[in-house]
Image 1: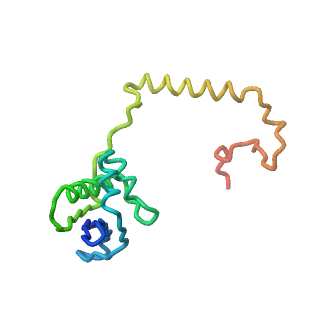
Image 2: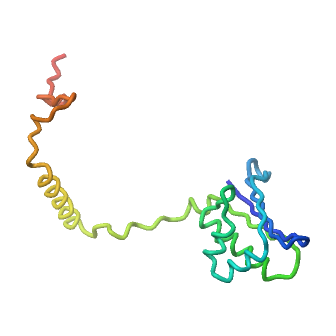
Image 3: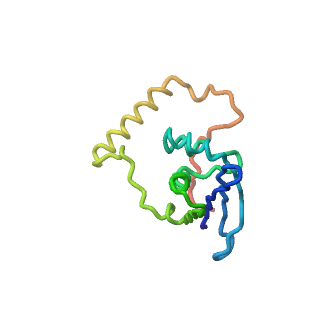
Length: 156
């Protein structure tokens, strides 16, 4: 799904307007949300950094993901630094983020031997934690089967 954000400036009361659109049908965008911000408060937030700017334009109704918010913040920065009244459009396709290659976890064992060592540690920890519990004395509505259902002969 594509999303479009239009950031524009209103001259009367110095305000920035952010409109969020979603592509509900092929190349047809529908308005989801519109928020207005005093231009001076956004300038103040921008002077403290991008993360502060993002925090200042996120609201209860307008809360884009961080990846989207950084692109919106770039557009706001551009608009605040230019003199014109031209709106800026930011079009983001979700598939960009979904199709990225994911990196492997950093704590993955390099060899099979290391993986076995980790398994042994986990087994030892579980055995030590539960070795003093007598399973027959547990008062529960569940009963432990004497035989494993997979051990039944196929004489049916």
